[in-house]
Length: 328
Image (cartoon, rainbow, N blue to C red; front, top):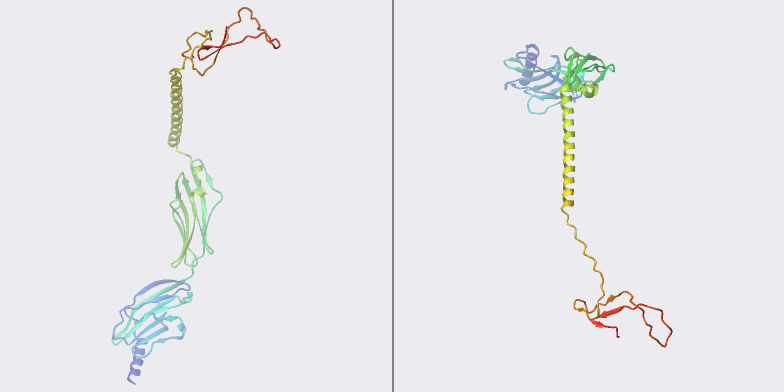
């Protein structure tokens, strides 16, 4: 009976006392995500810890005496991750956007140790960056327009590039869409960025400057062009000089080889002379047979033989091993 009276008194005090020490914290949640609501500095002599939505809708109640209670609007959508008084809200939708307050009833009065202003947002839609086909080019510059667009908004901007330096007319362009997201178009390094974002998601599209204003359209500075041409000419001259000296040295080398070449003298042809059998044949190889043929002198008498007459012939004198084969 006493506990019931205490509980009833605490409820009446909780509903009649004004909040003290409220700390509002902004929180952004993507649709379908969960949210953890923490509460700290709960006095040890608390009687009730209560979570409310938009000051009037009860979520859950932690009584000092009795069991915790989850109210019908959030049944099945609340978890309790720890032993403290924190709660986790599951699968938040845009209708769940609002103020969530933790209220603590103590014997000394009513306190609000935590308060969260929750905003549930859908992911941002894709974004598209397009370049106006009417690109203005001159000998030294390139000017073009771009459009950054989403499902419900668009923004345009003009860029001018002089050689490799680009600028945005009017600076960075930005706009807040009807859904509360931010749409921006700006220049970053060598790219044009179209950025669409809110507090929970973002997406972007971009174009390279060189794809819009190709570098080959930019004129090459005169000093650089002169240097390049001079370097090419010097390289050609060096190559020609190397070839010239190489061919000249090679010709001198070949001429020197021709002049310094010693050719062997041909040996005189030995005339064959008639040698008599009595001449010294010590220099002859005993195994060699030399044919000494002399001119025909006088007439030759044919020997009579028992056979038929032989035609007139000239026979050679053959000398072998220093012995005469002619018998007089």
